[in-house]
Amino acid sequence: MKKNEAGWDRVVRVVLGIGLLSLTLIGPQTWLGLVGLVPLVTGLLGFCPLYGMCGSSTCPGPKSAP
Image 1: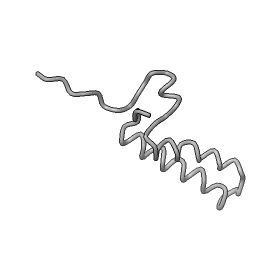
Image 2: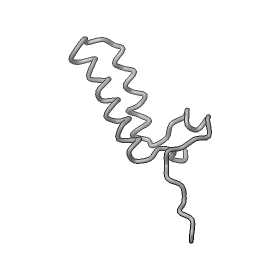
Image 3: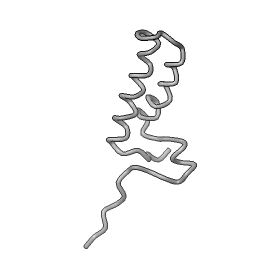
Image 4: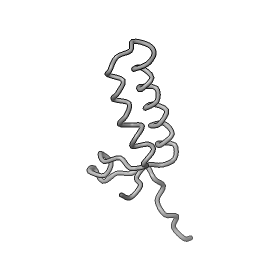
């Protein structure tokens, strides 16, 4: 698996995942918060399968020499 998420993208995903998972413990206490596992895991791994299928990436490309 080649990483296809930039650092900022990973941070956003982890924070969003933790926020959604918190819905299972506080707030409305619904199991719907388990959806937060998806952004949490993809953020921790640095790989998004959807990005891979679309051929996109938020990682910065290699810097070209002048």
